[in-house]
Length: 272
Image (cartoon, rainbow, N blue to C red; front, side, top):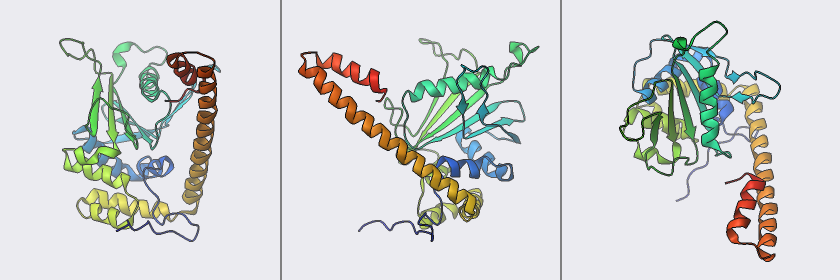
């Protein structure tokens, strides 16, 4: 039996906008009015109690005209000064792991203003929710990375911690609470949202808030604009791949090795 499709509004978009769309995710988890929902989600990920948090500007500012801009979906500071960044990535982008490290390092460095010393730096916890598998070395849904000594495995310091949550591996998650939150984020049909919401009062609050967001005309226009942008980007990537493959086969026809042709393809197109 085929799955029932999510119901559509008069604009052709889903009645309930999917939380894994980064614009919808930011509206749901990155709004000061929804702070309790964000705290409940973070407590499920980090397995610790959070008394309060402050939502920050998610844009890591450029320090010079040649500097690289980084934009996160949600950035918060806890009552103890700890910084938490959250990104929702439906699809992988090129050099995703390097990008995660760059954004984490930038969030650490941005704390050190003029006149401050290194002792004032607070830990930065990066949470990345992936719609596609990023960590192929493990089958876990929730991978946690620290900077550790290679042989004896003690932590160098606590300034950087990275959590990667894989929406394709929710069934592998041992924590029922975290599994429910990820299932909620990954849902698209109303009956699936409702099934999870019945299990957890805070997820039910998130569902009520999501329905309110989904009824907002501005949010629906933003969601549509994001869909168009993603489709255009995917079309461009596919065209680049096709052109790259044509160049690769021509390179092989000229007598070059497959290894050299492959290196040329990835270097020129910057795709994986």
